[in-house]
Image (tube, rainbow, N blue to C red; front, top):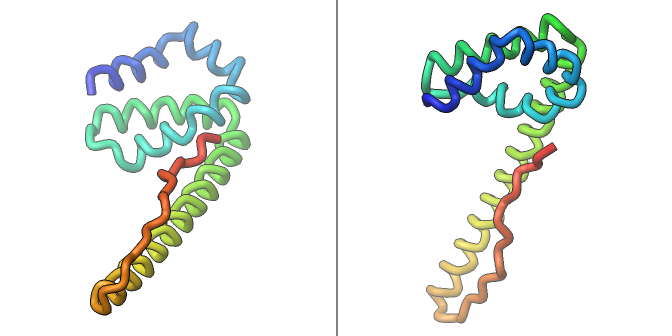
Length: 121
């Protein structure tokens, strides 16, 4: 928590804020998902509040860019939920096949599973 809090406090520095505003079109799409997740799910209220302050800096500076980033974030989250749902359905089906083959004592081959990689952009 202390690291997150200190990092977010850095945004209160006028010089840092000016640099961020000058480069917001590059920075915001990169950091927006982390900011949004912090505001939605972070366990520490101080971190949530500081994150909301950072979001306000961007929102006051370029509300259209924030709206665009939010739209992309929500689309990515929906896509990730769909991927997870499909993966769970495949595993359920595999478990059903394995159970039915185990009952009939047939061998079960399990394909190699590639770990989930959330989209980074």
